[in-house]
Amino acid sequence: AVGFECLSRASPVMNNFLRLMSFLGLLCSCIELPIIAQERRILETLTGQIDREVANLGVSASTPGLAILIRQPGAIDFVKAYGLANLDQKLPVTVDTAFELASAAKPITATAILILHDRGLLSLNDDIRKHLSELPAYGHVIRIRDLLQHTSGLPDYMSFENFDAKHGDYWTNEDYLQQFAKQHDAFPLRFQP
Image 1: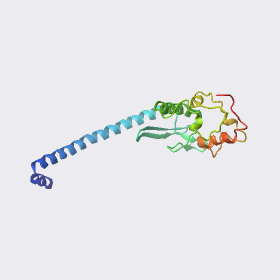
Image 2: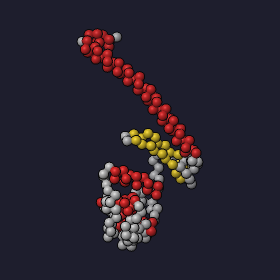
Image 3: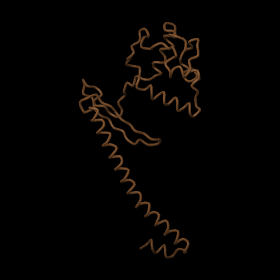
Image 4: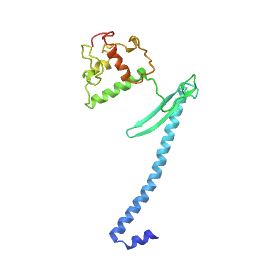
């Protein structure tokens, strides 16, 4: 009753404005609930489909596992972990588990580089040292293109002396990149790019 009393004492223009705002508020609340419910149904459907696909791959609570993250700009749409991270200790994969990606990251990295190239943020003909200044000079320009095509001539870091390829303290590319500088003299380019 208080709201209607205020409405009746306001000017006709203000009355119309307040009625419009009330109507829009009511309309938005009526629209928002179905949209939220629809988004929830979509997420539940997506989760069910992903769960089925993971099960079809043979991943279970007692097998080697994986984590899935689906992200769009500004929002994480889905994140879930499946299976075990350590079979011996029966430790489950969590959404925070660090995985050794090894060569699985190559197509992702190549795609990211090509996106940056398409956006004009780098050139495939750039000297790689423009972007990885820690890499030592080998006497020849190594271009981004050479790395993408596996024609750089860089030595295989797994061959470096006194260096364990699965070094327990090394987690990032920067950790391994330092080894190229340390082992530069013992391991020159295998061939010219």
